Image (cartoon, rainbow, N blue to C red; front, side, top):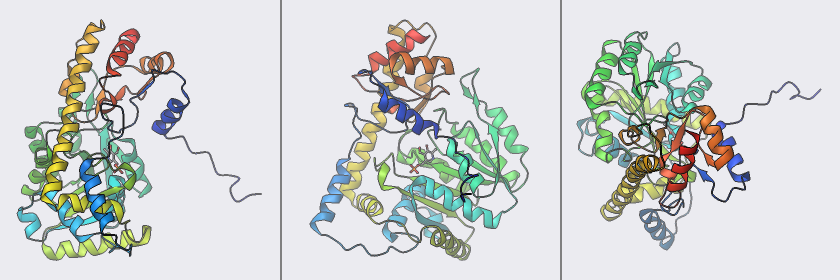
Length: 398
Ligand code: PLP
């Protein structure tokens, strides 16, 4: 008998499964709106100019690749702190933030989850319903029981904020609440600043632990605007976790550049937290890779490259918004009677289109337009060449 004879086949990742189906599709008009990746107007994955400039400078002065410190490049961690909390924020200046470089936003979540299992072993984790599917798996694999709080209301095509708040208020003290800082994946619906205040009040009153996933800083309303919610939690005096991803905002998906920041109550506590985060990293993969972090640090710490990045990120943000409007206009022009203007109130890379599973399957099989069965479409993969085709295809399955 083999050691592995009882090993079961794990379910396929639904998004990767879609990708495989897309790759095998021979329809010349096929469009992949399944993955959460930004493509430019030519349907290409961009290589940002700021990244190219930073890499050129690195190639002109080649450096050997020693091991990085366990918590990553110091200049990178400091740049992340400034980006997430504000360069002049008291919380950073007073040494209360521990930031570690992580392997993408996923890595930041995983380090945070493993550390939380040490400090709050009996806690339950709540994720939004629906959420990015990996949230559940990451926290379950760290040993937590994972439940959900109400978030999306299909009937009104908006956030069920009353339900969300009621679920947070009903949570046991110490519950870990995973919140999407901006650009909610998969729905595209964020809560308002005033609603965030209510969430923060509930987190504080019920003694919950907020874990903010910021995978899309800069894709919503702007870098500082999207980061403002973090400042609100800090101002409320809460100990929070923030995971950062540069996969989308730098178009550096494969370099796996992210971070985890933890806000402690004082400098001494932050130092102890950092020492424990380092143990988690050391016992998982020892220390992070050099290249992606070095590129992001070089861009964020150089005023010219930073300005170029902000410009390029702004262009991505604006192009997505334009595509939302074109989708709404195009659907109307293609004969869709239903008011689809909710697509422009959504924010970030995704749209919960409200289409049923049957409609999504038809879109895929009859037209080669790929979104997830939940009706999620990646608006960031639409462009001036495929938008008309997509609108007509959607109109035909209505
Ligand atoms: N969190 C959310 C909400 C995401 O949508 C994603 C990526 O799609 C991630 C985290 C993971 O980011 P990364 O690819 O940097 O690991």
